[in-house]
Image 1 (spheres, rainbow, N blue to C red):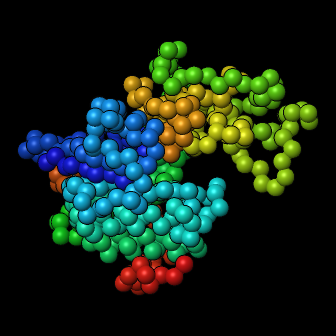
Image 2: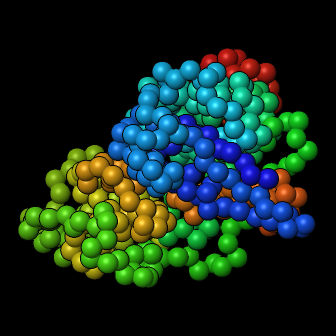
Image 3: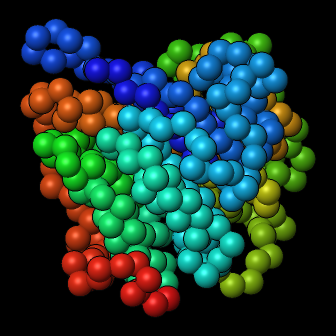
Amino acid sequence: MKFKMGEFFCGPGGMALGARLSGTKKSDNSAYSITPTWATDYDLDTCTTYSENIHDQCLKDNDHVILDDVRQLNIQNLESCDGFAFGFPCNDFSIVGKTKGLNGIYGPLYRLGVEYLKIHQPMWFVAENVGGLSSSNEGKAFVKILTALKNAGYTITPHLYKFEKYGIPQARHRIIIVGIRNDLDVKFNVPAPSDDEAYKTSKQAITEPLIPDNAHNHTHTIQSSRVIERLKHIAPGENAWSDNIPKHLQLNVNGAKLSNIYKRLDPNRPAYTVTGSGGGGTHMYHWKENRALTNRERARLQTFPDNFIFHGSKESVRKQIGMAVPPEGAKKIFEAILDTFAGNDYSYIESNITTYATEVSSLVTYQNEEDISI
């Protein structure tokens, strides 16, 4: 079985690469795989990166990557696929932002993915967003989204994945919802974390093997003398609020003190979450060298291979890497989907979402998402 997959909000291709790398075999030795067939995003650099790494051809010659605002697409005319992925924008659900949820600009965009599901009825889907989704709009946004996905004709399995438990060298926590079409006689289960309790560390990811000096996207940031001097007083795993920083190098900040400001990696632990931002001391900083990480090092923490080349300015690349789904994390979820359809046994755990989202039990009481007022 070769599943064709379409994708909304594709980003640089973390989800697609994970899908392409996944695979399994049935007991009769027949192969199950996923082929990313088409995708769409509104950013030129992002689409160029996706096009040249996932489909191995330039954007100008490739009609499989649609450069457009998804709100302007005719969803009815899009190609029907066996599987569908959409990491709908997280800006309004992130606890770092203003948490407007469904009242924001980006929050309602999940409905476009639901529209594709209703029209084209793929066999399965994978939807991804930040952990803050479950608490946005007092928990009602999450219930509303789950209700819409369920009513599109799918049995859904939401779960808060802690990717560091799946061998990803980064503490990245994301809600991923897998849906299987109701008429199919298969049941998806959340794949169990790795049996190896020794997490992969940030140092292992960045140094094993060493990154060649001429690697793509490996340009070092030129740090100011003041930043270098400040970093000298910050120990691995610590940040700009360390008591060891002399007063003249301390930051003059009122209110909340973000923990990732000038924060060094702890070489003995997975990295903290890679984000798309980079200003104000949020680039992520090396545990030993007095500098910010390069984009290639950040890509290593996101499990992109070194031959995956990002296109655009250094700032654009940083954003693409931070917004992506770690390919190796996505691969584990897609392989569980393939094993599900192949009828293979695999280790699994119960979904943790009922304890994580306090109002998810309300899902059964709503017949339509419109019944849930925000």
